[in-house]
Amino acid sequence: MTDDDYVFKALADPTRRLLLDRLFERDGRTLTELESQLEMTRFGVMKHLRVLEDAGLVVTRKSGREKLHFLNPVPIRLIHDRWIDKYTEHRVSALAELKTQLEEKTA
Amino acid sequence: MSTMTATTTQVYSIFIKATPEAIWDAITQPQFTEQYFYGVRVEIADGRRISHGPDGSLWGNEEVVEEDPPRKLVHEWLSQWDPEMAAEPASRVTWEIQPGDDGVSQLTVVHDKLDASPKTAAGVAGGWMRVLSGLKTLLETGSPLA
Image (cartoon, rainbow over all chains, first blue to last red; front, side):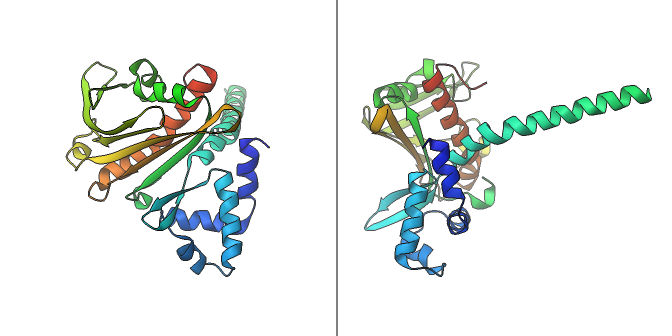
């Protein structure tokens, strides 16, 4: 699998997207904090966090005895650059062309 | 990220197909940084991190707290290009380079000690993503981001 594959796979699950949203609201949370907001076993949450970590979407840092989870927005930015910018740019230029054609007709 | 979500510790991580040494050079030598760091020429020398803007003027002179090539670089951070941010207390930036499989290294940037510097925290959030994305492109393709 490529880097993109891991990111898309990680994002293709509602629980994992929810975890990312929780970290977006407040970063640097422990497993216990994240677990308390989900109706899921600790093991289940750990598994999802593991997939997010493998995709680089979550990065963990030690702080004293605690392991804190941080949202890493960089892979999403790279997906955006690769998969969204390209197509929206095309769409915009297609619309611009349509506008030019229509306006030429009415001129 | 928006102001609302800016937190006192920000973590950014990226996988780059390059050796730790190549990444180290790219973050500590001006001929590389000017190609992805908003045109800024950054130099690590004598325990200082000196940066010059695209116009050649001095943009920063921050203390290097830890230097362990090619694995770890820690320095103070002041956003000198903006007077309001520059007036806030210095924060801290940690670069960590971890070698991995297949010649792919992981670069992690941690920007912390931002508790008393909310404007800086909000101001740098989008910037780090652009810097890291540009650094990856430069090292993997040899050319800067368009």
